[in-house]
Length: 158
Image 1 (spheres, rainbow, N blue to C red):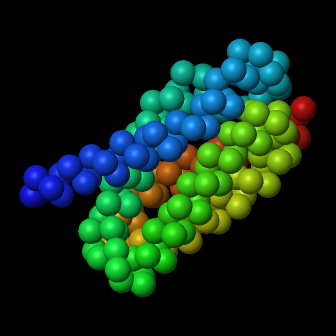
Image 2 (tube, one colour):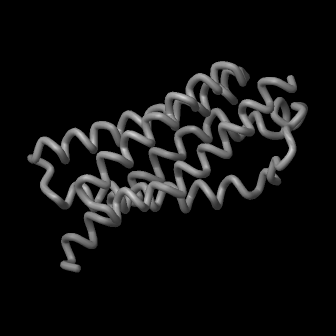
Image 3 (cartoon, helix red, strand yellow):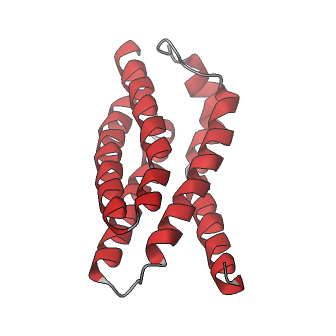
């Protein structure tokens, strides 16, 4: 990999991590208080697992976006795919503000459902351009599927 491509890859990863961390503004203050008081569904993992998982997923997202960008940002298919990537990212961050910030599992459930659909669409578009990029988003889809189960359980139990 050329040095300038490696630098751009790092920028995509760092950018993804930074954008992904915006949601922690709403999340972190509510974990020891509101979230702790909620009844959780079975299979709810310990709180410490979420940070490392999201760090890995945001890195994979950054790599995937870089692989698509590398195919030629001026191509309509690339621009369209990256637009969907941005849309799903907005819903990803928004979920934290709805679920944790607004303390609304129902609003979070609506948002995460839209997020799930937008991730599926992003994967479809990415795979059409670069299979590896699309496949890198599958762990993200699986985690959001699990998070949807958790969100739904919390919404119904509380």
